[in-house]
Length: 443
Image 1 (tube, rainbow, N blue to C red):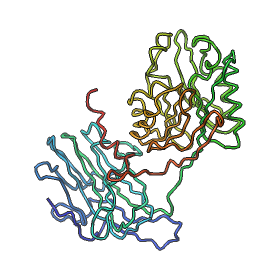
Image 2 (image 1 turned 120 degrees about the vertical axis):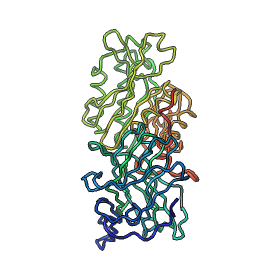
Image 3 (image 1 turned 90 degrees about the vertical axis):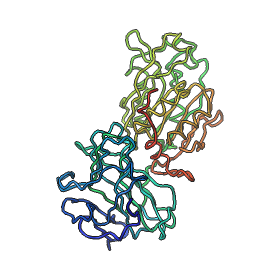
Image 4 (image 1 turned 30 degrees about the horizontal axis):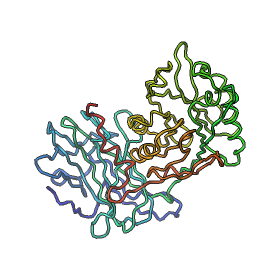
């Protein structure tokens, strides 16, 4: 094993650019590329070392002179058939400051790696002046794909006492895997960006309406009357076209688009917000329990068909859906699950794994503890809208940020999707969760 305490970084390829620009200008703190042109010492570029927990599981390391994105060289790791292989390249960035905002990014190319999110590891350990970790390490996740190359990224505020960063770029758990790293950058940004979203939920139970149109009209009036709350996203409950009508599912089922989506579209465009609501969808002889998403322009942006049906629904002739779509909005990605889906962890996990940052839960009634669990275990915001359960907004720690109740049936909560939630001893579970999840194991 090589000494992880590295010498100061220098020479070509490792560029420390301490800018004298104004405070509101981004600056590159460190940038690494062009490995093929660097002088090597014992097969390593200046300022770099290799690591592995044990010599017997160390992968093979090489500077591939033409393996980079632009053909100018890359750091290569190969497991070489070793089922236990784990290790990587590491380097150190000095001169960092606590409280500053840093954006790390790197590109990789993978071959023979079935689960890249788990096996391709970019680990950031923030250290004090003595080289001691000041919080659990952070892990960058994939954010962009171009051809054979994937970009990883992590944005954070450097924790208290930070003076340097130990960066590890590793490969693990892929015995036939080969991995190339290139275009590695650490950039300081002037401020931590915010991604504010105003989320509205509704707690209302229509009674004796006699028609789907009237039940839906009551929800729309409530939301319109609260327009001064200026929501970006509105979540309505499950089955807004059957509640209070005294009718059966088949009697209120309609095509999508259809009359109810037309009314919801008018609401969305009037308030310039996204609206999610649960309807019953008819497609020929098939009826689904469906949630629709309307965008700010009143356009149908997508729909989700409830995948996990209680016996009361399938015995009444409802058919389950079979997909977990995630929808891109102008503020981020959202996923939708409906009522009984909450009972099963797979739904929230699938949506979150596809990038959903907010889970919307139109629900009749269910287990509040499970709702908290789904938010916590997937590190996402969750919004419920219900009749027999609490209509609330949860943060990724499972904490209630706001709740709509009978006497105040509409509430709006402002959330910041850029906020990171660090757990003591564990770190940022938003990224750690996906590094350690095992979707490859048989279910």
